[in-house]
Image 1 (tube, helix red, strand yellow):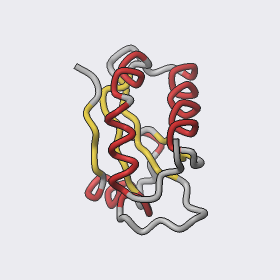
Image 2 (cartoon, helix red, strand yellow):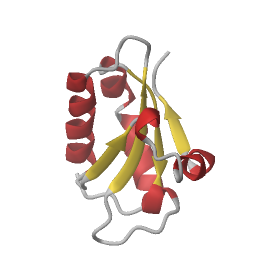
Image 3 (tube, helix red, strand yellow):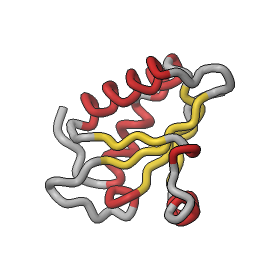
Length: 104
């Protein structure tokens, strides 16, 4: 599989791996940053906000999601939770994020 180069590429791959993400307890995952704006450079990582189903958030699930996505997107992934967002830039991110629904 090739490295992702556009916002559309990332969203397509996230949708393709819905079942894998669901098994890891993900409710939804959102794209933001340079890929969210469709302005990535060759060095850009993929910024994603992950939200887990109730009772499914764990270190193991978080790391498994991160490893899965780095492998599938063939780019470094910056995975964050809503709680980890900066109070200064978090509201901007939440206004401009594009979610892929995963969980039930």
